[in-house]
Amino acid sequence: MSATAPHAGPSPIRRPLAAAALLTALVSLVFGLLLAGAGPASAHAALTGSDPADGAVVDTAPKEVTLSFSEAIAVGDDSIRVLDPSGKRADTDTEPKDLSEGSTVRYGVALHSGLPDGTYTVAWQAISADSHPISGAFTFSIGAPSDTTVALPSQEAGGGPVGVVYDIARYAAYGGFVLLVGGSAFVLACWRGGATALPMQRLVVRGWLTLTAATLVMLLLRNPYTGSGKFADAFDLAGLQSVLDTKPGAALVSRLLLLGAAALFIAVLFGTYARREDEREKKDLTFGLAVGGGVVATGIAATWAMSEHASTGIQANIAMPVDVLHLLAVAAWLGGLASLLVALYRTPDIGSAAVRRFSAVAFGSVVVLAATGIYQSWRQVGSWSALTGTRYGQLLILKVALIAVLLAVAWFSRRWTGRLTDSAAAAAAEEASEEEPASESDSVSADPDPERAAQLARQRAALTATKKKRIRDADPQRSGLRRSVLAEAAVAVVLLAVTTMLTSTEPGRTEEEAAAGTPSASAPAAGGPVNLKMPFDTGGQNGKGTVRIDIEPGRTGSNDLHVWIDGSDGKPRDVPELKLALTLESKDIGPLPVVPDRLAEGHWSASAVQIPMAGDWKIDVTVRTSDIDQVTIDKNAKIG
Image (cartoon, rainbow, N blue to C red; front, side, top):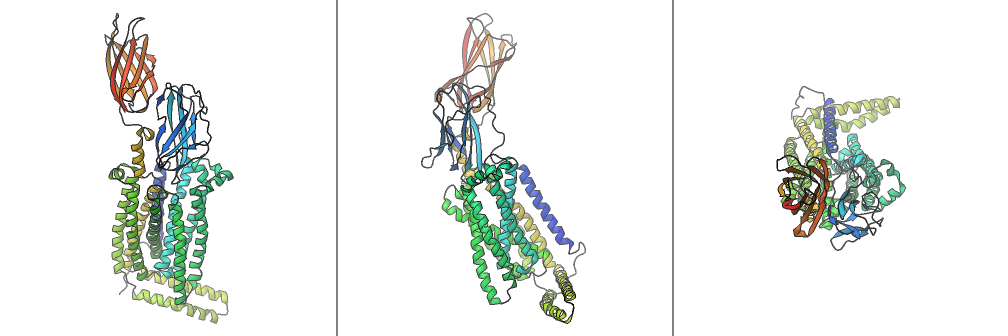
């Protein structure tokens, strides 16, 4: 095949640098957008109920407060705090009591006896079974609602600067795992000659360094991430000890130990293995490295499976090994893709056979990803409504779309691979390079100056490498493959980022089950402002008029209530006394008294009016226009 002259444009040296700059900019943009737009990690366990319920008004003080969750959680001291209207502790238990029965997860704290009337705040914080911190707060009232001085924290668990750094480490850990495992697999399965290529060595070693550093950061920040949110607590030995006693802490320590074994694997791969020349010995060593490396890679992948989504929920015993397979397939495909990109741009030696072998590995990885992904989607989503109506489901749709795009680009890469051949000129260059060591040794022995001989040898090696690379770059098929693989890598970066986001998002199945359990515990029931107009007549002189009532936002929880009174002439009118009461007769709740404050002539208001649950509420209004003239009127309104 005749050599084709390269197109005019950037030099071969600048093209790899431009490609690297493009990938770096893309990675920075994607992760910058993700971290800028992301808040704290979404909770994976959800509060499904409480007793008393959020916003409830009870006649007598309860003996305890209990909280129910959608899945197992870990609690510690002060995980549940009950605060009276002045902000003082109203509970007696430092550590919540485990009241779980069967599949019901429930924790509670006892309350002091003789608690006065007023509004009480329940603040809670825990760690979900899949390692993510969760927190929340709600109120209930004894006797009647009151003002409260309790200021709830505006920052959710896992948020703030500590949460941002922890999330960065999470993204980096996945990226490092992909490069470490995928790069090593590419060398052993596709291109054994890559063991001697410096760019390939750097890729794998950088993957190991990234994963190790990210794991150390996550281990140190685990205590403040799930607790105080302060960087200083990263070096609290007592907090670190408590982290080591948890499932996520044990997983991170196990990962560090396995990374020690991975370091030994890398040393052998790019040391002893790279220098081995006997084919039989190299074949045996390849098998040993593949088995040992596979065990280490599986163990590292299991540290995610044993502490995140797969470890909780339905069919956990099946989900964890499936998750391990999924992670290994992701690493083999995307890490191999990154390795191929580096090999095509930074080394002149990779041949068509290695590219075709990777094509087969990538196809097998996609098959595994499809099978494991379908199972994981069913397990974490469970319904079409959860697929389209939850953030997890929407991210999953985006991931599937990105995979489809990646497969489409890979189809073009496969076409270029089919056309790829090793040109005669390139083969001659390879033969010349194989003969080079002999001529170099002859020069070394002939030259009396060893230092000069070494310098000449380095110059010859550089010239040979430049010649081989120039021949490779002149091949239009190889240039087309490079562009196609670069496009694949760009899509793969976004895909990996979306995959990492999925690990920190509440599964759609859990979100729907929590919402179906008790809407008042997870989110206020949907509703809208309530507007009422009620005529009245107290029977006395000037006793006629109209009451107008607005309730906003008109849903369960806290509401603002405004009352206007107009006289018979339609102008605002003051009255000596105005009282309201709310009753939900279908549930025997109420009457709940509301005493509004006068704001202006004919205008009264009351804030933080608690509506404990949705329903058809009867609103009683008592208007007194003189010492003896009074009337009570009522009207029903749908609230929540």
